[in-house]
Length: 444
Ligand code: ADP
Ligand code: MG
Image (cartoon, rainbow, N blue to C red; front, side, top):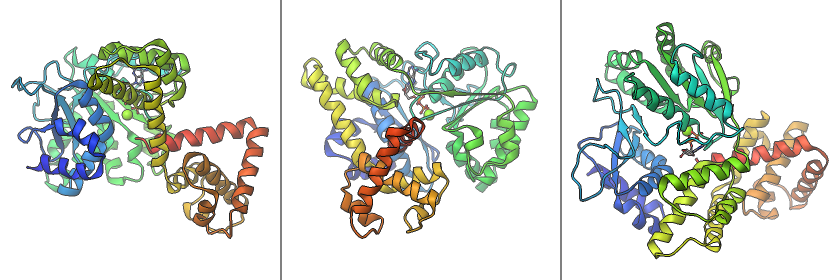
C-alpha cells in the first residue's frame, strides 16, 4: 500500500527512535487520499503536529519521488479505538461544503484569532487580518502579509478562513505550491474548466507562500486571471510571502503591481515578552504545564521561529509523559541544546552561500571563485564568517572549500568581519539578519 511504502522510505531517512515514537503510530487513509492529497491519521494532537511540522515536507517529497505528484500532506487525529469517519473535533476539517471533493481547502480549526498572541511585532498584521475577515472584499484587497519563517503568517490566514467559514462563506485556502500542482494536473488532464470553476467561485481566496511564484510563468499567468476575476467581483484575496512583493524575483510586473493594490503588512520577529506569552498560550492550549523559569529559558534561548519553539514544547511534553516525570529546568536545557546543535549540524556551507549570494546580489559561483572584485570579496568574507559560526567547519576545511592555499586567508577574513561588526551597528544587524535567514531557511 502506497502510504505504508512511503513511511518505509521515510524510516530509512530518519533516526530509528523518531520512527518508533511518532511515525509508527500513523495510519494512511487510502480511500480518502488522492494524488494531490495524502491523508494520515495520528492518535493524538501532539503526534499529529509533530509529524506535520517535522516530516510533512519530507513525506510529501517522498510521494513525489514515488508518484510524480507532490501531494499536500494532512495529518488528522483519530484515536485507534473509535471508528468515527468524520474529523469533528480533530485537528483539521474540510471546508467548501458545497464541493465535498475539493480537499485542498483544508483549514486548521485551532488557528484562530483567539489563539493568536498579539504583540508589537505582529499587531499591525493581526489587526489588518481581523478587519479583512470582518469585511471581506471591502477594505484592503488584496491583503498581503509578509515576514520570516514561523512568525504566524499561515496562522493568520487560517484565522481569516475559520472566521468566514463559520459565517457560511466559501473559503479556499491553498499554498501556492498546491495551486501550482493542481494547475499542472488539470492542464495535463484537460480539465482546466474544473480548476477555474473552483478557484473563481469562492468568496475568499487565501494563498499561502506566494514567493514560490518566482519564475513560474505559466502559474503566474493563471493566477493573474484568477486574481482579476475575483477582484473584479469584489471577492477577497489574502496572500502571504516570506518577502515583500518587490523582493520576489522573477515576478511579472502586472502581478506585482496588483499585489500592491491593497494593503501590505509585515510581521516582525517577536520580542521576548511576546515569545513568553506565546509559549504560555501554547502550553495552555495543549494542557501542558511548564514552570516560569523554563518558559523564560526557552524564550531567551530559542530563536524567533515559533514553529521551532512549539517543537520544543511538544518534545518536552512527550518525553515527560513517556518517562512519567515532571519537566525540570535541566531537562529543558538539554532538549533546547540538542535542538540547537542539530540545527547547526544541518547547515552546510552551500546553504550559506545560497542565502548570502541572493541577499548581496552576487552569484554563488562568484563567491566560490578567486575574483578579487570588491563586492565579491565582501560576500566571500561574510560567508566565511557565517560558516565559522553556524557550521562545525574548521578554518582549514573552509580554506579547502574556497580553494585557498591555507587557512591564513580564512583567518584574515574572520578578522576583517569581526572589526566591521565592532565598529558598524548596521553591518552587525545585517550579519544577524543573514544568520537568521540561514537558520530559518534550513529549518523549514
Ligand atoms: P509562518 O507561516 O509565518 O511560517 P505559522 O503561521 O505556520 O508561521 O506559525 C508557526 C507556528 O507558530 C504555528 O503553530 C502558529 O500557531 C504559531 N504562532 C506563530 N505566531 C504566533 C502567535 N503570535 N500566537 C500564537 N501562535 C503563534
Ligand atoms: Mg507558513
